Image 1 (cartoon, rainbow, N blue to C red):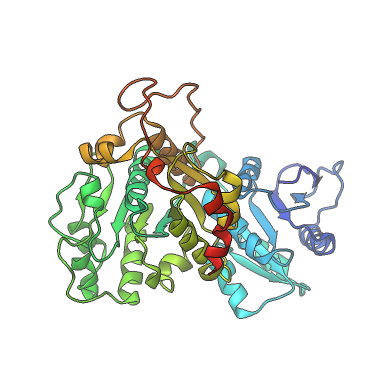
Image 2: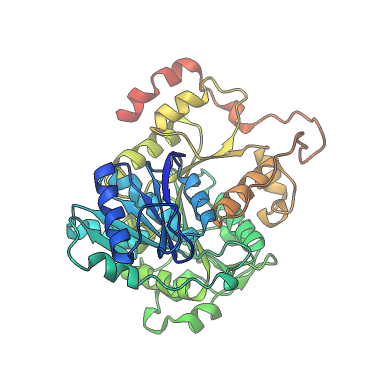
Length: 435
């Protein structure tokens, strides 16, 4: 967030923030706010009814957005027109992390833009130029904030969707570990839905046996409500609830309407819903992608994996308001013939998360993920950091010295080292991706 701000500080009343790079539009909103509340833009005046603080730019990183909430604003107004796609992400991040009312303002008010803003979490859409009474009406709908009732820990209700760039990237391992950490650290009710097709393995990863599956829910949508949903769930020792994938091939595929209803019922019943969809891009038009609070694209550092991830980022999400967080799974900097800069170029963006490979085959064969989630390993810590960031908790301090699963200082050969990728291969990666 830009440190350049202008503040009209008054005693008592409402506190409102404005985020907008365009000075003319920002000044229009400031004037409307001050006129509607009888305030003046003067820090010496204490009789005014509100505090207005301006931020002259969008946050440089999305994770910086919630920092402004420490000021305890009653409402935040965001300019959509300077960078509509990024502005909607800022709205989404702010709306998911605070009780503040998030509003947007824009000179363009086409139907699609209004819908996207509402889905991102905006409560009001102010169309410029403002008409008489527009700002007054918007401010009247800001709920009164009960300061004494504010919880000490962040409260958030979230939908977290995990998509794999390719089968075998470990999306289920990451999603299940994320869900366990979210249930443990947030203290909120959390549900993991395994939508991997045709046979998901979240139950196996968690070391669980389940009597019912997602097929029971999707094939009985007429009776699907919170009570019926809860009867289908299995409970993990961490407190996480699981709606498992079927153990047999399903007879028929589920419709998008059935998936949407399952999602709606789940979000009513649980504070956090984590969905593992494997590599199912056929669900792109479902509510999973239209309403997802956080979308994670899981990939590995390999030619085919990065190629698939590049196509998803540039073709599936280029015209959508979501910007998935990229997760590099089983990551190692050893024995690779290319560096992080080249990976970022291949993906068209810098990955937000890296889950280290601590190898790999022996560990995954000997332990369930439920056991590994209790280990103090670099991989489990990285997944836990993702979960804590998603629910607004402070980042855990990194350890100064790493301890392996099988003893201190033991060199374990990564399975990535068996690949034949080298610097020359990667020099042509961008050409192969575009092929």
